Amino acid sequence: MQPMTPVTPRPAAHLALAAVVMSIAAACGGAPASSAPSSAAASLAAVGPATVGPAVTPASSPTSAPSLTPVPGAQSNAPDPVGTRIPTTQTDWGEILDRLPATFPIYPDAGIAEFGDEVVSGSFEAPVDVAPLVAWYTDALSERGYAVDTGDPLEDGSRVMDVTADLPECRMQLAFRPADGSTIMTVLVASACANGTG
Image (cartoon, rainbow, N blue to C red):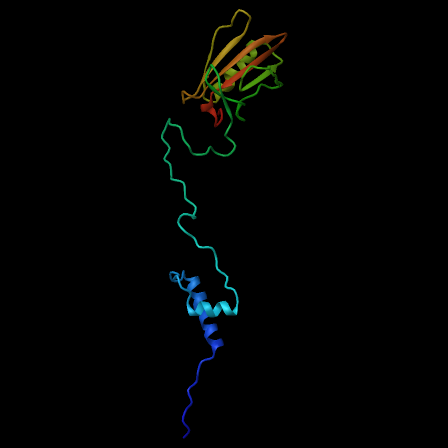
C-alpha cells in the first residue's frame, strides 16, 4: 500500500472561497470593518477591484416629518390639498384670496372687469341692474348654506352684501355698483375660505 501524499489547496480555490464568503457577508450586512485589511481582501485586490456600495449612516438617511394632529381653529403647517392653495393679500378688510375659488358662483353673461389698483378677489361686469343681480347672488349663496345680509341701497344705488359661513372666519363681501345699464361687482373672499365656497 502506497502512502498518501497530502493534498494542498490551490491558491485559486482560496480566492474563490474568499470571494464567496465576502459577497455573502456583504449581502447580510457583514461584520464591522477592521482598520487593517485582511489577507482575503488583499488576495481579492490582486484579482481585481471589488464593488462596494455607499455606507448608510444615520446622518445620511432621510428623516421623516413628524406626524401632526390638526387642532380645530388653529393654523396648520400641513400642506393644503392639491389645487386649493390660492395666494393671499392683506387688506384693510382682512386677508383675502387673490382670486376666487373655482366654486364661486358667476352670474350668467358676466364678464371680468379690471380696476387698476383696487385689490379684490374678483371683479365682474354683469349686463343687468343692481337689484336683480343682488337677488341672484342672495339665492345662489343661500342655497350653498351661507348667511346673506344685504344692506339698504346707498345714495348712488350701490349695494353691499356681507356673506358668512358656519366657520366665522370664512366670510365674503360683494359690492354692486350701477354703471350705465350694467352693474360692476367686486368680491372680497377671506383667506379662511381657501377650500372653496360650497
